Length: 209
Image 1 (tube, rainbow, N blue to C red):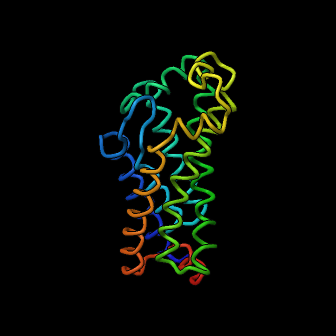
Image 2 (cartoon, helix red, strand yellow; image 1 turned 120 degrees about the horizontal axis):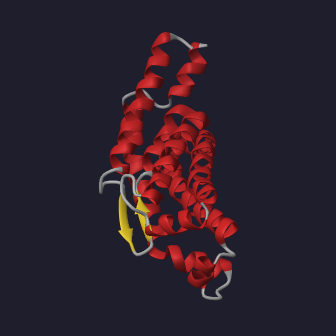
């Protein structure tokens, strides 16, 4: 990796981390509706995966997951659900908030690489943005049910519903709006990066090797 490519990689990682932290600790990152929140923090994760590949996506996902967990204890905002889950089991609450976001970012790197081969980088950015929100919802809800499904709190929320029905009704319009926003905004920023010839960095690293 040459010095210029390494510097660009570190700069992008730093900028995206700063943006994600700004969003996480201000109203820019979340739109709270009931026990759930529409999050826009999936967008920097998608952009990291697009520009820096699976490892960069996973690293940004880890930052997102950590900020999400900290909200369970009132740092940078409060998650009503997170606080309850933390009281039930702090370790499982951490895993439920952290692992899905890391996995999301890691897989997005491969989503972009694969989709850019047949759809081009501009459309691939939109696909990656959609998958960022989609994966986040699926992994978050799956881990929630797997880790806390037998608790009194979750049983009360499920109200005897089938797991699939519960997930669909629980996330509802929140998830649809989140996916739409992530698709459009990631596509727009990705297009700007494409025009600036910094998309994606990992290809530049490979060519410079």
